[in-house]
Image 1 (tube, rainbow, N blue to C red):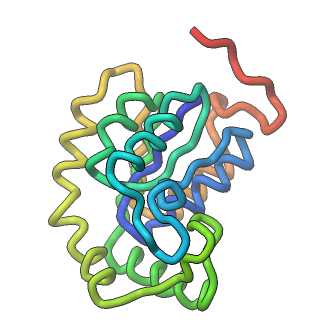
Image 2 (image 1 turned 60 degrees about the vertical axis):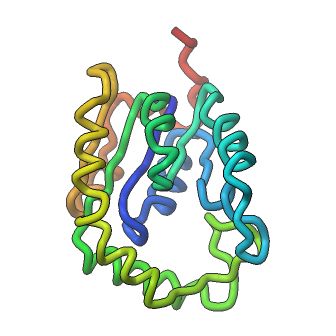
Length: 182
């Protein structure tokens, strides 16, 4: 496990899982939101964002969390492990609302500085529509991956918690040196 892509609906806990997995493995964590958003909720231009993300994906070791479906194929192709948080809408909606309450008036840890947490009807509808809009396409993308990749598909938060509590032997301990490149 050297390159981990974490995908799923907004509010599914991708960034929280990325941080926890980074603590366990020592892999550097990259939040796509921090690459895309500049302070004050200003979006990077598409070409600039693509280049910044390309540079991150080209590195030997990482955990990258986020969807940004346009850029997902490149991340999935480069990853050796894909973790899909495929949770119920109500779970993702509740987590998004809870995140808004916890980070009221400030930027959350996985967001660029100057991007205070916000929530609106459009965002809530984005989460609600995720299964109809994106789930089938995600299944297709994952089905097309080569057999050498590990794909972990979690349907419930408690399954993620169990996995983290007793991670597979392939997870290196925090201070282990990286495995040699193949």
